[in-house]
Image (cartoon, one colour):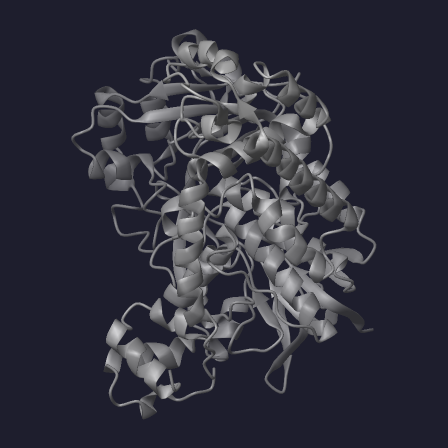
Length: 624
């Protein structure tokens, strides 16, 4: 018997869940195949979502109509807005989640999607006919046929775990790997590489002396990830805690270096430079006497803690003896040691911006198999692959975000244009236009675009329109309202800024760095009446308005810069063009242009090895 679908998603991690949800909500009959239906979007590493740049991605996923933000809100046990001391372009939301609740809430979401079906099995190969993917075959010998296949197998493809000298096959501790896919894809010309990542030990919180550690509570404001209109329960919060290594800890760890798979040549794959193991840290930063660690709760109803910053593949006895030397962990008990995992990935320059593969039509890659690391990066790729698979089935135009539109656009453009030489992690520094790509305005940037392709629903659009209207009301009032010195000088003196000598428009006062609009509201009755009319959206509207007022010049300047660069993105290149015909560009540029096949002049200009003079030749060839 043959089972037919529009889209098959392989893998139930963060990428797979977002891909299946997007494809189903786009109207495609979708099948999600996963090894274990009790572990949808399993938080294999730390139980947290968001952070610097990653929080912006979660808000973008939500603005487009994905679910990572909603599920995070439903399961979070702590929320913090990072970098509040810096400008708003750097503000980054982060949430600690209940690991079990997070997975359960994802299952509820997926089971609520009408067009989405499930099958628990291991995919062992793709069905390929006439050079195109038409389905998958599973370990049970079942053949599922589809128009599109999205592969999101994470760390499971040829996964191999290491704890000291011990090797275990698997994609996660206690879970089997996936075999056969890399070998088959290699036959069709795919480049396959190996990467590694690691995860720390899990600790018994009953054995930790928290009094010796620095408590790190969350923000108790009514903040959340999703732009949807609902309240979040802030009554059940748990703190994180900060600990530190010391020289004794480092000495204990060094005793195991001879048995470390990272140092004895057992592991030769690429690891994450920005999230190194503890043994990497003490070697690379040998001058440091201590390293910061974070003890993060795994959930509300468990004593299990995650020791963030102590990732390791050292023998478990060495890990344990070193932890006993950390202040507060003198009597610690370990539930599970840290381990490293190696897995196959496919260099993402083999993809189009839609995340469809160049070698095999109808096949999409998303998540860690593209060389990325992080739940947020994986979820974003999955959602975009699901959207584009659904659009292509309908015969509609592809959905690709620009670098000036979203961190998701930066992420995917970096992957397919530049490739990766280590597990890719998003940072704000990767975005040229981060003043435009703030976490507070993700809905303003993306919700209408998503609604135009049929994903973001009417409720999201209505909430966006209301937000824009309320911001306009507030800013228009401040632009028109004149404030007299006797009304405001007492307040200005209290906040440490110069008094007025004559009447001034209120918006000019609000531009001063010492003046906050929320503080002004308490000083000006007319402003207070407007604010009260905003209801529970008041703080959201004030924050957005304040950013628009105080950073107006910076925002306009960055928008103008982006618009100038975007002109190169509008000049299309033939993806089948043979660049060997252009003898006046460098050999390296010809080779890389032929391999990556950029879609625009802008993309070509970002390829490593393509110089400005090479771009000039391309522009001349295009008649520009």
